[in-house]
Image (tube, rainbow, N blue to C red; front, side, top):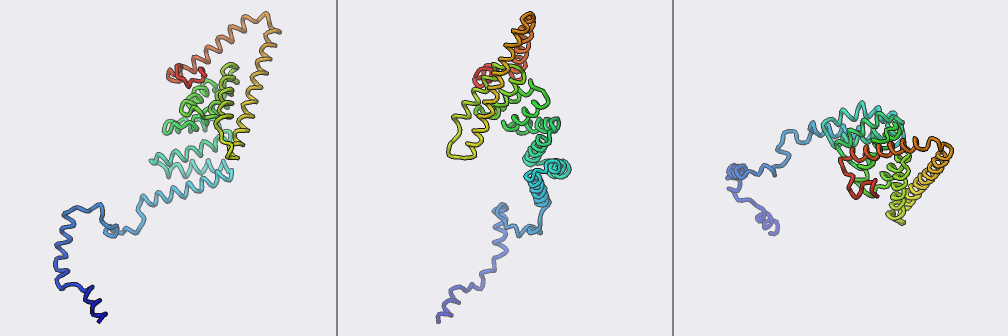
Length: 275
């Protein structure tokens, strides 16, 4: 009896499927296309061209990351140029990722001219403060100090508490013999390094110590350079007036090139000239 009751409970009426075509027509008329099962698509279970491109790029990126992480920078750069860039063509985000690795490889290999070209294109697509800093560091190596100041300024303008950007500014001003601005930027860097880092994380403490050591070294160089300059003044007292004119001209030129090249932001609160 239980079998017969169960069979009767799940049994269909004789005319249950009679109106099947009419039901399908109603579904089409109600336009549920967004909810149609993929099985209705021809060969839905096969990879599409887009899927193949995604897999090809992910495979290439994995290979590139492996080469970079194993410090095979030359191989990584050649692989990125020959394989990864063509695969990522037309994919902005993927191209940015590849270009970042290319730039880092160039920096590791001391290929400064190429790293500048790559980073200049990269900051156009993604003006990130880390990329500005990388570009500034490359410009320093090419002795393009005025351009480096502008780039570092953009880095700290994008992230006012970015420690590396302020250290870069201080180093650049030191190389330009502008000790006053170098000292200001170094002092501000020290303030960031000693107040913004959490003592809970060992990695941060290590980074903080290295940063403070670097800033201390910059401040030491500033004091030594100032002492040498004072000694030079005493030894060349006859040329003191000429030296003063030259220094005034150099300082004015630095400030002018800095303020004019940063889109007239000289009055901004985060301008390194007004710490």
